[in-house]
Image 1 (tube, rainbow, N blue to C red):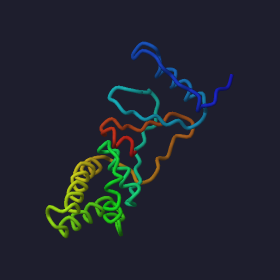
Image 2 (image 1 turned 45 degrees about the horizontal axis):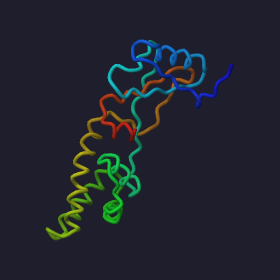
Image 3 (image 1 turned 180 degrees about the vertical axis):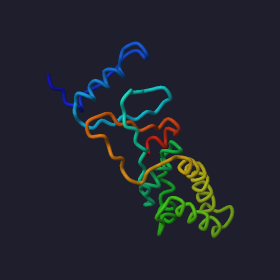
Image 4 (image 1 turned 135 degrees about the vertical axis):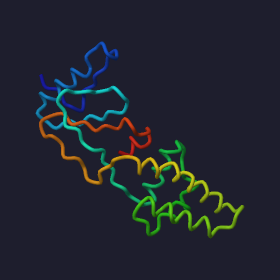
Length: 165
């Protein structure tokens, strides 16, 4: 019997149902590269696996920055969009976006709406940038073992960072 890989789901009681064993067997028999993401400590431990470094391609366009801030704060940034667009002008990295925000903040009048929005945006970046700097991230996609199990360990990352990777 053949089952399309996009139609497989494995469920069961933790530590009792053999989910990891079933996934390992399916992955080995598929003869295709398989990539597992570990997101919580103690999950998906395979005897034979190729560990790959987490991949993150940094962008500084306003759409990406807006989605990054939305993921971090778990709220929509539609109101802040015009300020985000201004802050991303000419930036190639997220650090440069934050540097632009600081310059725009310093140029704005204290107590103004502009000052308030740039203060908030800078505070968001104070959450995002340190975590990104702490993570060992690769800027190139991983090379997967072509007929085996590949694991990308994301256990030391926040949910938001895991989503970005």
